[in-house]
Length: 385
Length: 156
Image: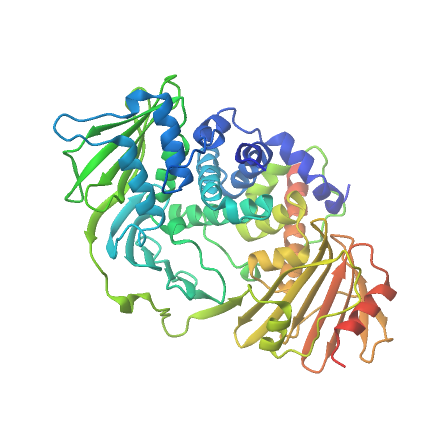
């Protein structure tokens, strides 16, 4: 058997060889049982889930002696503070959070849309400022800069959000929500401690420490039924206040290899921006849907690419770049275009393709079940008149 | 598609994907959980959950690897190219694919997983890895050669 034949068997072999742990879905437990959606007046799905839990479990409304604090109200405000801090009237904060997956991370947030995180162990930086998203990795001395694209949601990058989301997602009629303390402190700040317990006594208890002033979640913890702490994420230092706005600008050390991405513009706009000699082909089959046009600028070069798909399956991929490859596949020369083109078959995918060079630009089109005549017609349609 | 259907459909594949990256069952579970947590948050804006979850799982795994320092990302172009060694024509059929994969350097392992296990096209894979198509082809070729040698060695 050749290596290609063997590798093509990979899906079946891997599925057979790597057993999925029986407990995986149980571990995803709360996630696979999403909360019921009943909206409270302020309209969050989360608050609906909180309400559903409250309806079924009267005990969810735990009132502390003297404090008279409502667990579902705290959970609702915490969700709002974490997912949209600006809407929750939080002007900014900064501090350090420690989590099992990312270690110590310095975090700075400035309302409404600026966030900067820096992982202590790796030095990796991730920033958003409402217009631009950037990352820097000192290990590879490389950076990425994404402009004109929808930035990653701040809530996704907020430390503590994911564990708290798990907390919320787990909240069903099978759980009991309560406040177990309002006197503890995290990072020097007074907090409410929310606890979510599985009534069937199967899943771990989840705890969240919620800042009494801002309602930001400052710490989360998962605790097994025998009391073993399974994981803890939380701020070890936290200051409520505005960080320096100057932090939130892309700033790469000299010599960083920065790659710029633009992916949420139309193909026509990207073609114009790239200034590459190509046009959007017309007269393609009506059911071919253009997908994922993207322009990458790197090391002084540009690479424009896009796909066509039918029912989610790629029918054609197009790449145009001013970086001429050092080597390309051997193939059958075809000279029916104004420039010399070469047809080939991709030995791995079995797809057929065509590549050619025009001036200082390299073109490649490739797809399944395309004849050379079809490829030549598409190639002709790509070239500027 | 309902969230629990997405979990049902994609979690086995994502676990295996994470395991092949991390080579550790517990870490793989952690990675899959984090990927689904992110999906849970972003699901309203995700058009293709399968592809999105593949990408997020990869990112989570690479972050874990960086953090754990278990494995340095090696530029495969800097790996020694043993041109003098012939590429085995035939490989054993009974040897374990996953064991072969986890012995490969990450850069080689990754392209084989995405090409053959996930069935991703050249174009999509080059974009996913943020490398040029020609670099990808070179990397795939070397990865297949390394895989063939490993399988041959095992057989011997």
